[in-house]
Image (cartoon, rainbow, N blue to C red; front, side, top):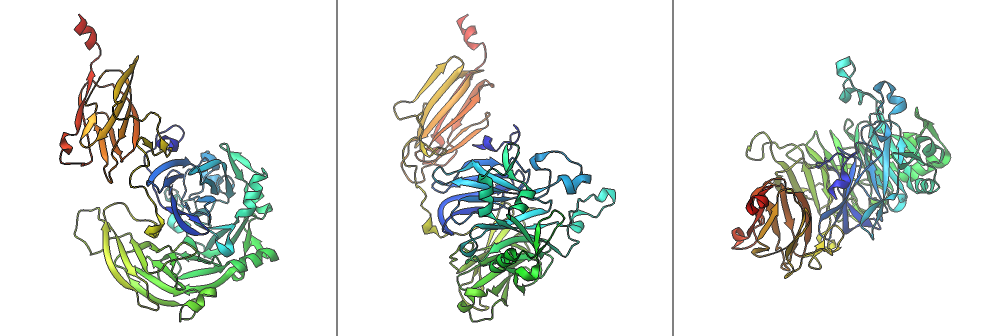
Length: 558
């Protein structure tokens, strides 16, 4: 499964994960699957929430980087993977002198087969975009279902090069007053793809930029400069965009966008993409504070925006159908609550769905400031839990939680009762990758070591506190195929299996069967043992792998 994510034959075992997204049914979380993107390598992973294990990693054949994933359409028909830094499609070489002509952006729509629990590459496609740097995306819902939206930055098409006397990227990409909100008619794009009106890039179907324009798939409208996220309101009628260098959130009306498209009232960018006028698409602007980034929603008609520079969360009122849910005027800042860090993302309970729960918000903070003991230069990141269950300005900080892992980026919060994970695998001998019984699964009483020439196959079981067999004797140069079944049926009875010196370490959950292979190129005595504390006799759960040096048998015969 990990090899599926290799790139041009090169093994890649790390990723820069950014945006997890839960599967949805009718715009609400259904607790079945989880998706996450890898910005560094333009990959998408599929996680099955029955056992919380990754089942698939898909490498994008069009782009080297991504960022705008992995938001899903309301029934998880598609997983959206937006691009990031413009480059020639298919990772080809082109000089930066030819940036405007040879560099491009992209967005990919991965078709998801819910029955198989896998992305169906054969039913997926991408859309070529101008060489602006696409950022976060979101899918339309309810009123805007069938459409998708991505923001962008660097509409200036800066290419950096301070060593050559050019403005640095952070200045060059921020010179203009606005960037472009990308508006996609996804339903039309799907029709165009199915009609075969695509070109191929690395064997993958791509709707060309010109086709996207001609077929009415792609539109732009100005957005605050240097934005970082577009968030669709629960009813699908409004889109919220924050520009990091603008103290406002800008609210767009999907109805106004449709009217502007129908009226054919637009300018065009340098590539011929229709640019709808801001005054024709904007519903409101709300001044929330310095460094606005991301917005979430509750069930009382409020929106919540993270303020990186203010180190605060702003609460403001939605208009439209939400106006009767709160006493304040629509499109107004109501209050702020300080967080004790520079906040990046934030999440409210089911705040990305058609039916937010309200009650709680988590501030996901990027900088640790004066709150925890010094543990060296690499400090823990921090979450803060905020009670948002009341109207008006009554938000309350409840809890600080340091997390000793990487920078928290994005999250979604699902009600626990929507999840139905297994406590143990359904049957002994279960293969989590296929979600079925492995026909090669070792069974109690049938443990053995079989030799076929220079290939040795081991069939082992694990139970507290015993591996069977306890002795495996092979020869240097053998190719080893090793199967292990954890025959436990008890909750949380996980076993580990490690062979030091051979880079082997496994976690085997109750009922699970795993298979691994290696070449016995090192002679010697290797003690394998359980690496998961499993009982009072955990330390005794061990065995010996004996690898005879080449020629040992012949010497003994002499």
